[in-house]
Image (cartoon, rainbow, N blue to C red):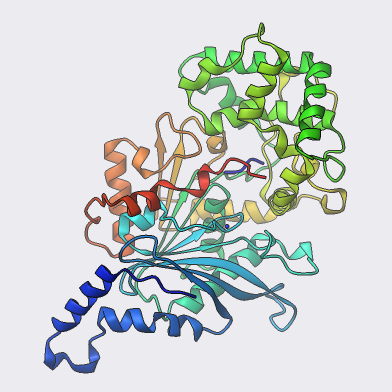
Length: 477
């Protein structure tokens, strides 16, 4: 997904306060107390948030842009929603507040919570509010002790349902759900179980591994991605060369691990296994994060060991498959192993060079105590629902993104799929061709109850809010 197999002092600007004072003066006298002014709304927002049962306002941060407020919150969730009187945990979320009269965007990360303010694309397009929620079991939103059997798509969807119910009395306009990659999957699962919570879903680059045993779609993707075979051939040749030089490159890996205090005891077991996993990941990671135009950087077979090591490290990241890199993503791998499924290309061109059969599976990236049996039923159920009964779903994929090899196929009930040409895992509405861009934007505005998209915002603060996107984080330690 985005990460393969990839977180109480109000700072209201004086100019904003001045504009609200002016708005108050403009309210007709006869309107009386029934009129809610911007000043009243600004003054009572914190009180209303603090009055929500189960919600804690951890802090309010300085306004990231004029016209916004930014809060870190937690919400008390049941570990098992079938046993609401049982153990609980605090789930983190952030609130980017615009105005209670504006639509709300429910941003599902699928992973941890971003720790800085940002606007997802739907939030910017509808000029709305936004909450962004940390997925259960990503620390610190993890029960203690952790009963991992309570990490499934229904429990997570119910987390989001509870938060929607808690905040709708404050934000009573239309709601849109969105997320990218695993976050996009999460937004679909939420709508599957609670279809009345939101008025539409915009899911970006969301995989749909409805039949985990049938992964030929990924082999077909890698056999055809790009405009010519040259890039595909260069990447496959590089992988072969790296495995041929295994001894030298594993020695470099050992030195790299020692210099960075990396260990391999908990998950992969050795630098040799982690090396093979990283090499297998190279082709995937390249197309996920890079463009065909970057193929010129692929080292030739005449490159030095260090040049090959550095390229693979830059593309796939040798640190990721160390314990320190991969253990924070145990909740993803656990869900992949138990319900979501995982991509498993055949790598036929590497025959004879691999030492560890069946390594490229979700359970390989989990400590032994979390390795689990796959249950295909939940995702097959979602797939059937999306294709036959769901409505108000909008999917955006990138033509060069391997995660789009197995996409969702929505019904024709006010649901749509768009593909951005030449785009990777960062595909969005903006990357679509002009006609598709206009159609997708119009659909989003209609669902959100917004007549027109806001005028282009050119302030530095808003540009920064819109530039940063959780999809662009590349496997941080």
